[in-house]
Image (tube, rainbow, N blue to C red; front, top):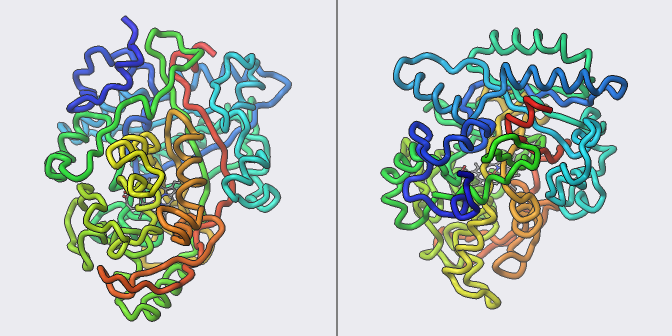
Length: 467
Ligand code: HEM
């Protein structure tokens, strides 16, 4: 029997048991991997394609073959992970296929067959969307992203040599049916402790909506049974029915992709200047911008890093309602206010506010690109290939960027933009002393620059293999 909307929207006590999926079996077999849970490979290549218009059937043929042979399902991903844990056998090549609206059209799909999300239909280059996000003009994006993009192929591996060989091999066939208009090479950046970080140096990927039993059981232990913050999420915020799927439980997810170049040297200079202005240490200054210290310690809980092996995600801002420890503008407070919106005058109340905020959550799947030595401080050529999955782009990624990260008024008047991703940059208010009411004005400039991007849909595998 097919899954119902209730099945998708119920919060499972322990999430989906991918090793014993029960009613979710068909869904997991037909859903692409990397959506429910990151694929975890160290290296990845992103190929942005434009189908050659003269032989669309050949493009379809290629897609079918590639998907049959290589696209990794959520089910396979889970089996590979299990084998790795039990027998130390690496998962090998992992691939995904994502399509844009234009991609669907060129492949001959009618409007009613194309996934219906509004921003997806408009595309990231649309002037209205760019205006809302405050993105740079398309002529200022990297050349490859200025072109019409039809599909994105993600190929990932732990072994870099195997990955590059595989990419070379598929490139030959691919070039017969598509122009590769752009390519990105991504990797997981790590600190000395082996934790995943982004280029500014902060531990990343800590707070995520969790869907699978394995993730939830682990997090529950680390996060004191979710007493302050429940990271579990239902499938309804992540998946939508694939209109072209061939099984009763064919689902897909919308992908937001953005290349964000990080000027690491300038970020560090700005952070030093902020530290001097407030007369505090540089580590605390960085934490006041991000909301967590380099090691992931939430600054609302501590004014020094605590070096936990797994940083806590079990916190909210109830002990910090004035933003004196973690400022309202801090990146993680703007992108996940954990109930703050329930404290503004027009709010329907705290519990309702938390429930609504939770629907805006996104499943982040970013990797880094460029310089891979974290001791270097690149000014250009390095950054984040930001990816996130969701069921509704307008209400999730776009909402987060447009209504929370960018505006200067958020929770309070003149809070200022998110210093990591808020566009345009502007003045913020910083606690002169951690936990004390006096605030100081300082403009932390924006050091992550949007270089191009697009909205995609990750279709079900049965669609791709029958395209
Ligand atoms: C969390 C960095 C772009 C949304 C974080 C964290 C860091 C970080 C260090 C804290 C660790 C964690 O909880 O995972 C960056 C950098 C970016 C970037 C350097 C750009 C170069 C974005 C974008 C969005 C976003 C574009 C979406 C609009 C989030 C969310 C969280 C987060 C939702 C988790 C917040 C929470 O639940 O506490 N980011 N990020 N980030 N970021 Fe970003």
